[in-house]
Image (cartoon, rainbow, N blue to C red; front, side):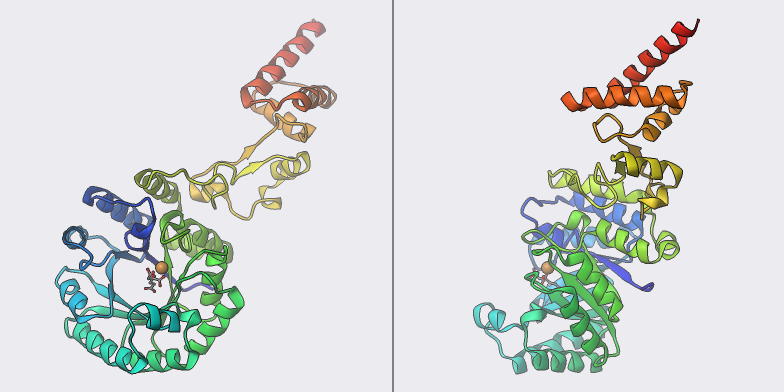
Length: 380
Ligand code: HCA
Ligand code: CU
């Protein structure tokens, strides 16, 4: 899979994260950082949500970013009328099609949905803007209804149709099947949106692309409604693994950490320890066997090259699983000349101490220096 675009929704789906209360200055910082990273689209909260949301939407449109700016609106003329006046490049229109949403949310039948969609889409097109039409809760919607609806809007000439796993229930096989089927029915682009309730959001996005989807919704660190959606960094890691050169040409990967730190700070969370690419241990190698191989050739145990992301590799040695090759490497870094036999001896010392309590980098370094000093002074 090589051709895909990111619709970055930190400023829309991400604003639905429990901790997100973005003021205009913060939104602008995030939009600029995402643009710098190189996402193709930035999706922002509906200007119909509140007066401040409308003003923020206009302000972001006025930044003159490279990324296209989209706003996300309900399939309703009232919302569309407000949105087309903000300066956005396009509208992502959404309506619920599952029986749950039809019964418990908006209460409309399919004929009504088609009629309303047609009116809204034609209106947006008359303003010369890009339009995407998507169904909320697609995986719990009737397939025949869904395909009919998409066929109709495709004929109207929408730029994209969207599939949304609003509740995070889909698995990669189901995604592949639905997108594959849809690919046979519409000729426009296909956007997909995956919630992460069962941890499938990245895999689902990838399966969608394999089946012919063209656009993936993400948010920084995956923030969104409940536990969120496909994270930008995780998707990038997945796509880099499939096509390193392509991904490196499209995005400034060394900016990922900055965007994540910015958003983490804005919503007062920590970047998770096990985060893709930027988690504190993402490039830390520990067991002696791993460390030895990594020092010979990093590809043995690394699918992502940390340097491509402005990150550095770390070989942890102050623990009981350490091996003499890793210790030797550290001794060389410290410019301490020791024979292999001596390295093995000091490695045993580290293991003994670490059986009682793991050692920090500085403690190991001190131990190595002391050991080296004793060896060299006893030689004299
Ligand atoms: C929501 C809406 C949405 C929309 C996705 C889309 C979803 O429930 O808040 O526009 O494709 O998950 O269904 O985020
Ligand atoms: Cu969503």
